[in-house]
Amino acid sequence: MAVSGQRRRPVVALYERIADAVHDGTYPPGSTLPSEPKLAAELGVSRPALREALLLLQEDGVLTVRRGVGRTVNDRPPRRGFEHIQPLEELIGAGGPLRVRALLRTVEEPTDFTTQHLLAPARAELRFWESVLTGEGTAAALSHEWAAADDVLDRVHPEFARALRATDPAASGKGAGAARSGGTAPATSMLAVLVAASRETALSAHSGITATLLGRRRGDQLGRPADTPAVLVTQVVRVGETPILAAKHMLPTGAPALPVLQSH
Image (cartoon, rainbow, N blue to C red; front, side, top):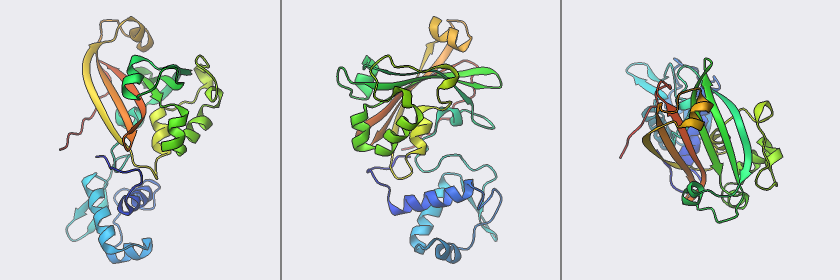
């Protein structure tokens, strides 16, 4: 589900407040929410706005209405809320997020992929992160993520720009080739940084899925033969009409299942 516009409507901010209260344990799994009048008074909001936010939380699987009981928190509420934009390590991590192992953190000039999906001009400098996602000692996916140029991020999503600089200071302000890898690089995905920085900014995303083979280099990185079948997921995240993150995720045969939500 995507929300248009650069700032969220008040009902979406209210949605996030309740979802945060669920995830921080104020309303733990299995608990029953206060009645609508009481909850509206506690949150200082109108009942119509509260009712709309509660309906969205029900649609997203956070809450369930039980006859004679009221609204209860589901035993396993989803990790993300309104837009269903989740870091891959959470999306495919059954029972808990996968671990992110940084292979490369660098700044590079646009490729054909980033020119197409980030609309990056020639000679722009784009942050590039390469990571392997692992679970129980097995490599489950290889991720390539690019952020839009700093001047674009400073204009349309300054919180994300600041978060990237704080997370990856060694690449900030350096030209192509400035790299960090191994244990010194942040053990997080770029999309996770974006999601954490976007509580007040609406995001939309589009993904494509194709079948392919790993190839030699990716096979070496994932510890699989080059001819291993794989799923290639491409992803573009936008603020309004402006793309700010583009990614390629390679999931070989045997990786955790990738849930797909279809809507119209």
